[in-house]
Image (cartoon, rainbow, N blue to C red; front, side):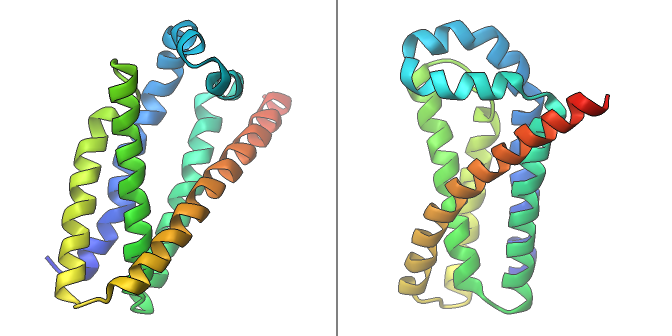
Amino acid sequence: MSTETIMWLLPIVFMLHDFEEIIMMKPWIGREQGALMQRFPRFMGRIIPHVSKLSTSSFSFAVLFMFALITVLTLISVECKLYSLWSGFLVGFGLHAIIHIIQFIVYRKYVPVIITSFPALLYSLLAFYTVYTRLNLEIMPILLWSMIAVTVLPISVLVAHYLAGRFETWLSGRF
């Protein structure tokens, strides 16, 4: 498999991972809301009201925003041969999968995205190793891009959810 194909698998793996979240989030939140509020009142007190008001369409809009970001980032990285940039954001994606695995361990029950978090993490590790060794990349630029990714990705998720809320308001007024 070519290096570019391995890189282009990132948006595909992201979408497969997020399909689980799109499909399962609403029913899971509805079923687990009480238990989540009881175990994690401060954190869930902010999350549940927002997620509960989003329709599946609006939640999908947030995922679309992140998918577009990852796809554009991959396109720029492949076309401009910015492999360290892509590798840094791949590290961010891998850390995101680890966070989901930690959520599962802490909650000790199913959480949306846990089923696909393990393959996503495996992909992240194998893709990083393959791109890093094939292209003989230097670690310092990757670390720099990883730090940027760890800053940019959470901000992007907040922006995506803000836009999803606005989209939900728009949907409510239109239909």
